[in-house]
View 1 (cartoon, rainbow over the protein chains, first blue to last red):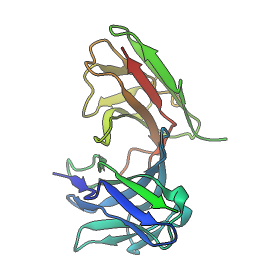
View 2 (cartoon, rainbow over the protein chains, first blue to last red):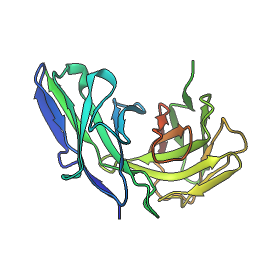
View 3 (cartoon, rainbow over the protein chains, first blue to last red):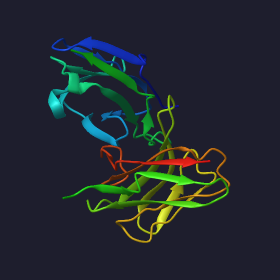
Length: 115
Length: 114
């Protein structure tokens, strides 16, 4: 069965420091991986996705994510955090084999960037 | 200005009443989705539609109904049979319901039932 885990409910980082939000997955076939961000009382905004090719994916607002097939991970990163990055981040995965085509969402990680 | 609109932003209803949440997109997307978001539970899929005049149940369809009569519109009705309707409801769309397409979300409707 497909699954996605965001092992940290909350991540705290100082402004200007690098940030990492972790995501691991389990899926049959090739994984299609997505990161979204949600600001309070707002809808989700798409940040980036991994489909195939280069393992380092660059997205919106300076975010990037690294696909690691052997560790089944897709961690979100940013070299220098901003206070405005404080939000809820969701990882999602979708497979392409058999019954594993449904988009599965992680429970979210709350990122707090402290000034 | 392209995007997804949901109305209203806040909705209050008495228990036992049906309520319909609006979702409109002008992105020319074939696929549309309804999610429910509760604190600590992430997003749960209620219904989805791959194409106009077609829709399928998601993981928590009981107590909800939808229609897809137009490509641009995918309204969700929360019926009195839904036991815990108070939640934040999100509508999304994607170009196609395929693995490699991302979803675009509306701003959400917060429904409170008392």
